[in-house]
Image (cartoon, rainbow, N blue to C red; front, side, top):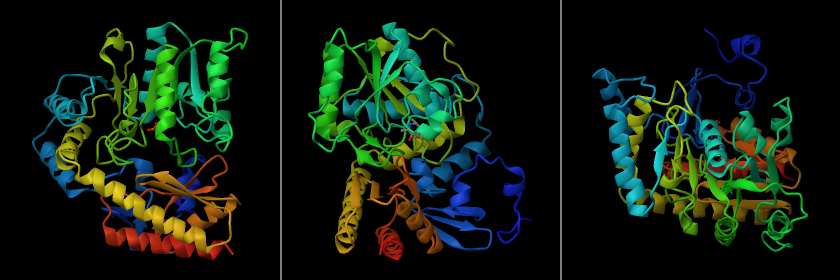
Length: 422
Ligand SMILES: *Cc1c(COP(=O)(O)O)cnc(C)c1O
């Protein structure tokens, strides 16, 4: 048995150097319930990380666990490629009834493979097939995943470098507020689209996050998203919203783009769609764009039936009314208030960022964000950093966190910040 006091752990001796989160939190976790994780020495941590957005409903949520155990007990199909199963039928019906129809959204549902990057890859492929064009437009500081297509539209230079080959066919445009509000929205984008001499390759699609998670908790303004959707329509460019992290209620509504009243052509969903932290992803496609040939995008793990079961239960438990949405917005505003109070009480250079329950505190001295996360860990709180220089402390609790847990975590966070900012 490995204990956290061993001089060299099995992780250090055997697991690849690529591991990352385990370096920030060098303990061995064993059990987890709701907003708490417990390590093998019995120490409990409050979780403001929530599986990077894959655990919006907390760890081992009892409602979902019940449905999962019952399904396994009755020998429900676990692995099914893209075979028709009762669990998949139930998910599709429930998703249509509870999520799509009430929002007047008309999408076909593709199961692109189990991860977020599978969804992004399928979206890029489909956009190219539909339009016959190769070029993509992405945004500064975007994050879309680690496979080559997704990396080609991702901003972070360290992550891009990992590709080892040129990443091509994507042109970056400034995300909202990239020039601190000093440049009119889409000035450059519109100009190069309209100028026959700009050398811009005609784009198949634009891929965008409504709030950039990994990029530093940067929310695009509602007007900016509306402007982007309108620009795409005018220039006949498909609009892909990557809602892998900000979807499933992270910003309040089920889809993060609902507030803008836009209807993207393709939507990427993953992280919290299973509700239980099980791998699952969806690519939502406007019906007229569903030009896939059978098996043209394939994959062994597109039919993770236990994930369909917990996903169905999640929709029934949390999305039949607006209780969760309202509580997410309220809790998010409480974090904002607390962060503003904190920033106001300390020397300058702290930036309060975010929307819904995706919140961040940006530091003018980037290393202070990592130090804050370290000081929070020492005090029993898990949170990660985001942004190109890891300059943002990211507060992303489960949507189901209780008010008491939220206050406790905010108190620890404030102590942690005060311990590093002097
Ligand atoms: C996490 C994430 C992805 C990639 O998902 P994986 O499951 O890690 O492949 C893509 N887009 C966004 C916005 C993400 O946050």
